[in-house]
Amino acid sequence: MAEALTFFSDGLRMSALFYPSRDAPGPGVVFCPGSRVTKETPYYHEYIPRLVDAGLSVLLFDYRGWGESEGAKGTLYPAEQVEDIRNALTCLGLRPEVDPRRMGLIGMSMGGALAMQATALDERVRAVVAVLSPMDGRKMLRGSRREYEWTELRETLASDRRQRVETGTGGTMDHFSPPTPERGRTTALAADPIPPIPIACVQAIHDFRPVELVHLIAPRGAMWIAATADPTCPVEHSQRAYAAAGSPKRLVEIDSSEHYGTYVKHADAILDEAVNWFDGHLGSAVITRTED
Image (cartoon, rainbow, N blue to C red; front, side, top):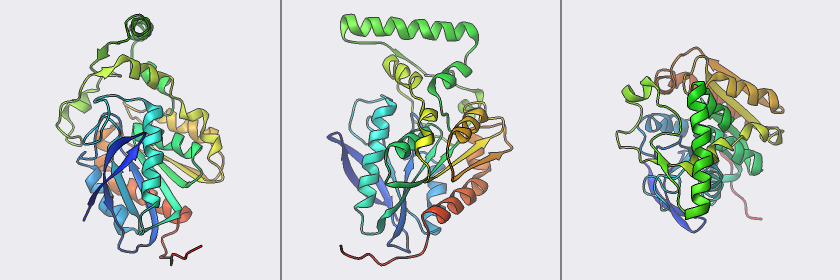
C-alpha cells in the first residue's frame, strides 16, 4: 500500500507516494517520471510493485507544476526538475524504512535523463537506471524535425527570447517535439490533457545535455536501457552516453520499434535488468540500522 506524503523543493510543496518494502530497512529508489506526465501514469503502477517485491522501497513523485505538486503549471525546466529529484532523494533517505547509504534512481524517458544528471551531481546516488531516455536535448529536438522545421524552431526560440527581454513574458507551444503517431494511440499514458509548454522551457530542454556529465558518475553504477528503433528517444542517445561513462556501466538494447509500447510489452525485461542492477549496486539484504 502506498503512503501519500509531501516534501518541499525550493519552498514548493511536492506531492509523492511512498511504497515501503516488506524487507525494510533496506535500499530505496526514487522513481523519476518522464516529461509532461504525473505519478498517476498508468504503467508506473505496474512497475512499482515489482520493484517493491524485489526488496526496494520506492518514492514516486510529481515534479513542480505537475500533478498535485505546487509550482507554475505546465513548466518543464530540467535544472529545476533535477533539483526536485535531489530533494526527493533527501525525503527518501529520511524514511526509517530506507538505508540512506543505499539509494538509487530509476527514470523513464526524460526522467531517465534527469536521473542521470542528478546522479552526476549527487554522490548519495549509488546506482541509476535510465529507461528509453534522451541524453542530449538539442539532438532530441533536432532529430524529431525536418530541416525546415528545425530552422523554424530555432527562429522561434530566438524570437521568444527577445520577447521575454522586451516584455517580461514569452509564448507557448503545444509540444516541444512533434508527437509521434504512437503517442496518439497509446494507453500507457494518463488521458489528462497536456497543457501548452512555455517556449522558454523548450530553450531549457535544448540546452540540457546530461551526456556531458555522465563521466562524473563512476565508480557508481549507471545503466541505460534502450529500444533499438525507438522513434521518440533514439537508441543513439543511450549508446553515446554509455560510451562517455566510466565503469561500472551497462547498456541493454531491446529489439523494439516503439517507445510507449516498449514500456508495456517489455516490462518484464526492463524490470529484470533494473532489479539486477540495483541488487548488484545497492544490495537487497536487510540490514540493522545503527546509531552513530
